[in-house]
Length: 416
Image 1 (cartoon, helix red, strand yellow):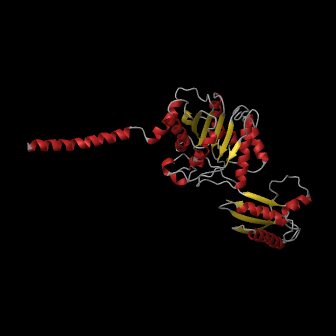
Image 2 (tube, rainbow, N blue to C red):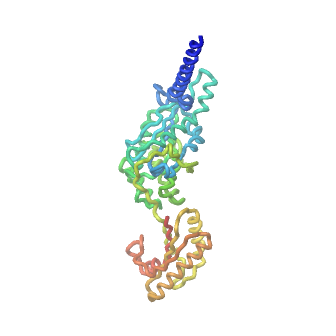
Image 3 (cartoon, one colour):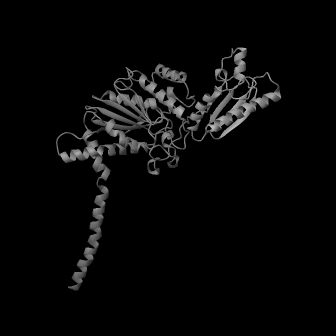
């Protein structure tokens, strides 16, 4: 009798771990909490006609200039911004898709394709409410997954991704909406910005005209598509950083390229640009090592104070009264830049003696340095350069007086 009891006890001891193991095994193999919350979006979209009630496509730039090359690069994480904005971006649409893109027009990969953006009518009302409430978090999760996708090739082809998205949206009915999460720094095709000056409308005009001539953007690319760019100029921490003025130029470039991709610019909605700061760097978990990008180096900014903008009278190291507002405007712009050095280069025309040239050019540089520092600019150095060699950026047929005005100038150079 005692042996039988011991046998039963021993058998129970063996059975209990087996039951526990079976329960644990069932938990591991079952759907995750996220799958349970978001699976209805994927299933509802299976076999359905895409975008019958409108379609939103979200493109995620997965290039290393946005995400960084390593987890320590401080990549841009737009997940929280997406979660805040998704109710607006999905307004009036029944379908949502998310894709990543990299350095070629064919490097567009769909993380979510034709998912349901809202619960179907009918059925359990409690389930519909729960499903509707889960949409922002589910889409933000898909965007986070897209951020972790590693492109096949380094670089960024924003226009190629736009064309791919335009093709997908062309087959949709109802509202067509495109959201592009990118720093806007294309490194391939007609919009290659690796040697861009990031300054002036002439350069913008040339890029838009070149892309139109090469058919990389056409007036039908985004027909009837409401287009939103998010985070232009927002790069990973370890990447080159745009100044506010350069970010404004980049904003203007993509508005122009976006408008060129619509049959009637401004219809049905203008090309909007939204600046979204990253809430936090991409975590190591979602930031695998990526192929290096061809770097877009933001050029140094130089203010040439000559001619009508001359800061000094001939043969004088004293700042003219008209110079003070000019320097104040420059100081306000420079104060907003992080991690920069400011060099003031003083020049004179060749009519004085060599000793006077060195003294006068240094005195002029010092006067500008002192005024900039008085206006709150730090990290300023002043160098008297004497007589300059040529007049950079000017036409070759300058008259005598124009040449002298260019010679007796001060250059203020901001170096990142």
